[in-house]
Image 1: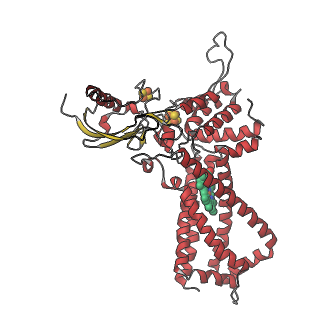
Image 2 (image 1 turned 90 degrees about the vertical axis):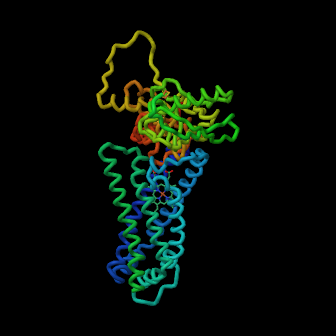
Image 3 (image 1 turned 45 degrees about the vertical axis):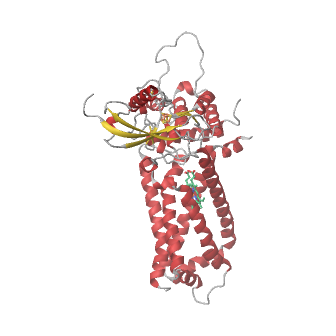
Length: 221
Length: 256
Ligand code: HEM
Ligand code: SF4
Ligand code: FES
């Protein structure tokens, strides 16, 4: 086996792939977040933003394919690690001490990951599919109308809110964990990295979740 | 016997053979607060033997927190609930009168139970044999302090060298990962000049054997550091990740 295969099959290599793909996804989330915030600047601002993306569609398609690959690597590796780790630890203790020696964010990475995956499917099959291939409403600002329309549905909005809370949990551990996996642990900077990770997770989770809440309360305006 | 004994209910894991199912057995015991948990097991065993029953099998050697043989899981915590304390150093004064304790063996696919509270930790030996050593020429003893080592580096290496190879990190981990143990061994040598000749082969060889012996991978939950009787820091795991990644770039293939 060449060094590359040896590396990617090793426990540390698999974690490296998780951290690398996860970090790329975290960067993507920031860009996605900024885009979503256009909604708060009104129908015109949001539709102008989406129209701008439309003009560079070929580039967007390339990015989408890359993004899909990154997601697939992250999810495949995550599930594989989960399965292997379950196999490495098949028996539980009579008393569960994990509440005292770990935090809930790190303990639940696999379950929050799978929940995000389910959310992702719902998200893509509604918004992404409608934006790209759906029938657009015959209004001046069709994209904005699609968003406000979906979020009038309380169940749909609730799915988004739950999805974003779960994402926040995943990210709170993910940010700091990626640094550790890359080998960056420092007496002074690691506590700071943990704080930045929590702030990142909070801003993204609250910011993303504010959209369905806001538009649901606005009643489709 | 003085009057300040405390009464404890001990549920202790009994398992006759590696393949038998095993179960908890309850022992009600009046214990001295000054006794260690191992001394309580000794006492119970004296009673059991007097009654002609099979004593509880458990491991211990130094009973002063340095040999690493005595790991038990007490109420879900390897080496018990007290931080930075080996099982043999855990005294009954840390428990309250009337408390119920669950005492069980380390549980991990890599550490199969041999009997009662004894597990097979030979996976650790295999990892050590793969790279937990330094090569040097024998001959006359070298002069002391011949090789200069900065104090900060020596401190980090000695902190890592504190690992007693007890396996509590594996027992505490939800993935039964041996990363803290292996990271301590890798770090101790990677930091020192004496460890440089095998530096990158060592980390590859030790990780390879670790992966082959049913240990899981690291999710960075840090349960290991919380339960380690020697307080080995997870910064060693970051160092090992670094060493391993750099090793890929430095050596094309593992030299056999
Ligand atoms: C936008 C979405 C996501 C982002 C930004 C993200 C980011 C990350 C990051 C940075 C890590 C830390 C890697 C490390 O510990 O070194 C991680 C770990 C993990 N992710 Fe994700 N992730 C996302 C979605 C998912 C999905 C959909 C799954 C589905 C299974 C998933 C499963 C996991 C698992 C299981 C781990 C822990 C791996 C381990 O330490 O054993 N993640 N994620
Ligand atoms: S790292 Fe700590 S818990 Fe793990 S084997 Fe060494 S001393 Fe025991
Ligand atoms: S018996 Fe040696 S460390 Fe406990």
